Image 1 (cartoon, one colour):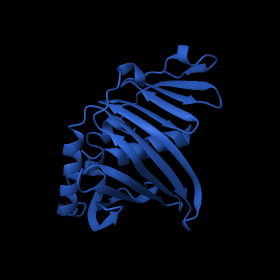
Image 2 (cartoon, one colour):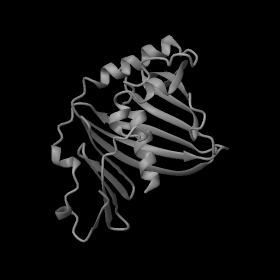
Image 3 (cartoon, one colour):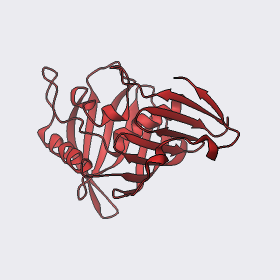
Image 4 (tube, one colour):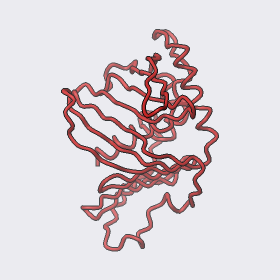
Length: 224
C-alpha cells in the first residue's frame, strides 16, 4: 500500500496545503518574502473552502524525463475528512479512522489516524507541517492556455528527505495550487495536475467512511 500513501501525501501537499510555509525557519537561511505572499494567499483562500471535490492526473517520469506511467484520480475534502480515489485504490478518512481499500485484492485495511510527531497526515499538512521544514523562492511566472501561474520552488531543510525539490504552480487569479512537481533523489519525478476543482461542493459526512455493506465480499483487516 506504500504508493497510495505517497500519493495521498503528495496530493495533499499540492492541492491545498500551505497554512504551510507561512514563516521562514529561524537560523536556517531566508525564504523569499514574495514567495511567502503567494503561499499566504493560498492558505487564506483555502480557509474559506467548506468542502472540495477535485479531479487530477498523476504523471510519473524517470530522471531522463521519460514517462513511466499516468494515473487519474479524484479527491474530496471536508475539514479533516478526506477521500482519495486513484486507479485501483481508495483511501477514506473520517478524521479518526483510515480505510485503505485495494480493489484488485478485494481487501480494506483499517487503521487509526496517526497523530504521532513523526507521522505525515493531512491534518498536519493543513496546520504547521511546512512552516519549519522548507525554504521557498519565487520563480518566474508561466502562462498556459491564457492563464498566468505563480511558481514557487520549495527545498527541504532536512537533507535526508527522499526528495530535494517541490515546484508549485499557483493560479494567479484564484490563489489555488493547480500543479505540483516533486523531484526525488532517486531521479523519479511526480507531476500532479488538477483537471477540475469545485470549492463549493456539498458532501455528506458518510462519504468519508468505508461501508462494508456497499462492498460485498471485501475482506476487512483491522490493524487498530
